[in-house]
Image (cartoon, rainbow over all chains, first blue to last red):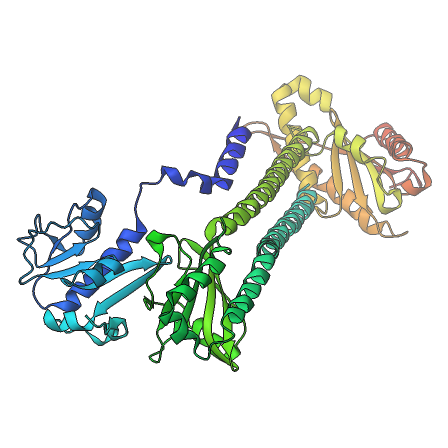
Length: 152
Length: 389
């Protein structure tokens, strides 16, 4: 019996990589995204960041709350990260920084000053020079290579 | 007995070390083998695709053969963009996730010209592309196709970059990104192979451990069956075990019998008889040379002593026999806390057992000498060869 249990244990250990479904779900991509957005937000303003993510999921809430004070609505926030394209038009733009995760949305909508998105499965960051100026955002040197001069 | 055990332990440890080294060597081979398999399988799985991609790059170059500025002409011609995109679309399969054409601007930033990705993932014309490896820049020096293996990107395994040249300068780069599916399939096969081998190794190792445990158990049982419980000496079973392999020219055979042992038993009882046997056994063990000589309780009050001899000179060995006789004689055998008795023994010795055909014959001669010792009044050593002390 002891030998049987020992064999069973070895067999289970040998195939343990098959049991990843038992591990609690945790999205590394959201974790990385939250870290990057946090660095960008801190570099964009000296004010204390109050982040609002429209239609935030529980998973995002859990991860983003480790890096930000989360706002329940657009009004009480000073940094908006629109990562689902579900931002209401009622959200006032004054005194707020708008960031997105979609390059096309960034290009089309002038209220966004930058975007972090996955392009061909690679992380990409883009800031638009003109909009940085309009929002009075002075980024640190590490972000210079991400600034694009796009004619608008 | 200790010597034998030590020898057995030594061989056991040596065997364990050899087997464990062998298993570790096998594991090392498996891990080396795994790397080679992965590399070879990936090469086999991708070679055709890489060839096709190079052909596709040549084809793009052919389409642009009348152009003097590839980048400008593609940027300015939606028709040309569409034509090239259709070419790249042929490259997209289950394993190739993306195929696109890039250029490097004057600031060293890579930008999209043509992208054959599905609409929801399609990059815009001139859209910036953040690279994740300096190998992208290296391609402009080597001017040769380059493979980039992704370790940080979760959904891609490798990217294949093919330069498209204009007047010996890299003008465009055709890129294909392999999805992880292929690599996962390969790794899945390797994992199964590795697990199977690991399982076999584990079973072998367990069987080996079981074998060692059984061997130790067997040794203990054997030791127990060869030991006389009362005196701690070897018993007759041990004699049967070694008698066929015993080298008779290396030993002197002696038979020892306690004098008047029956009277001791009758007078003082069997408990005292046992004490006498234990004490005699103890004296024998302390008098012989532990590393060389062997003492066996043959039965009742009779003992067999095998004293190691060196060639024809039996003087040293006979001295041991004389010490046994005198040590037993001088020893006070306490039968209770205050009273003691003195015991004597008679010993018959065969100094030349090599002249006998086997041990039993040699022992018979020692026994004959013992009989002679008993007949001559006990407490004496008789030698078969000479029949004199």
